[in-house]
Amino acid sequence: MKLREYFESVKGRGVLATADGEGKVDAAIYATPHFIDDETIAFIMRDRLTHSNLQSNPHAAYLFMETGQKFTGKRLFLTKTREEQDSELLYSLRRKKYSDDKNEPKFLVFFQVDKVLPLIGPGDEA
Image 1: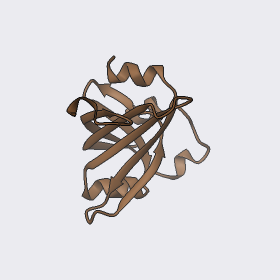
Image 2: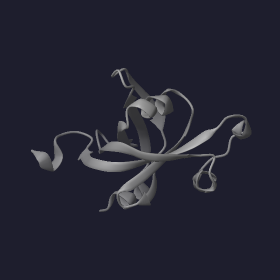
Image 3: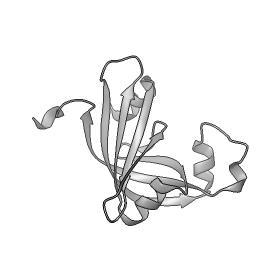
Image 4: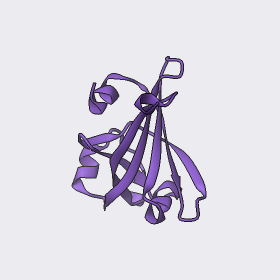
């Protein structure tokens, strides 16, 4: 099953982990990724700590745990490739609208998927 199909077929919660240029780590709850193509995903984010960290360190990890399943999910290892601010594509991809949307810039941040592993265990690398 392709990664896009996986995320379209399951429900769950995700955490996007980043670190700044000095290695200080942050983790934040994020919705499932938007698929641009088979190797590129994107997340919509505001200008907060996660976005700030990605300015000095392009590497991130996304951990996804399926709802109702015991320790089932995926780990995605990512590298930021580019971003857009308040673009038409960003607004077309949004799943929810918030009342304060116009007050704060939003960024569509694109990532190359470097590696995919199961939530638990080494995957195919063992």
